[in-house]
Length: 104
Image 1 (cartoon, rainbow, N blue to C red):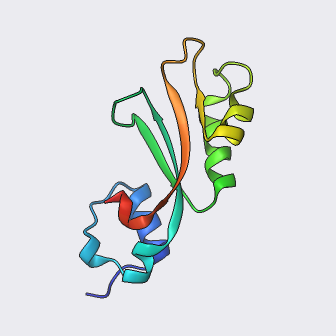
Image 2: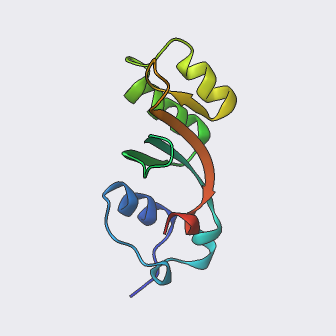
């Protein structure tokens, strides 16, 4: 079976299909992607998306959370890579750059 390329990996991750690192091309494992995660501090992410670019990750977060988020949400996310999604500041969205191999 041929090893998965970058587009196939992004599709599999979006569809939440299980992937083994051994099934992925080595060059793809080294590539960087942007991860948008919604979580409470110290907990696993309630929701996450893998994006090709930082801009895509920021737009995804804005579409999902900015409507209910406190004022300055998008600006804080753009500036710091992290922003609260509610007025208490407990839940947050974080945007970070990771290697594909770090997703497994």
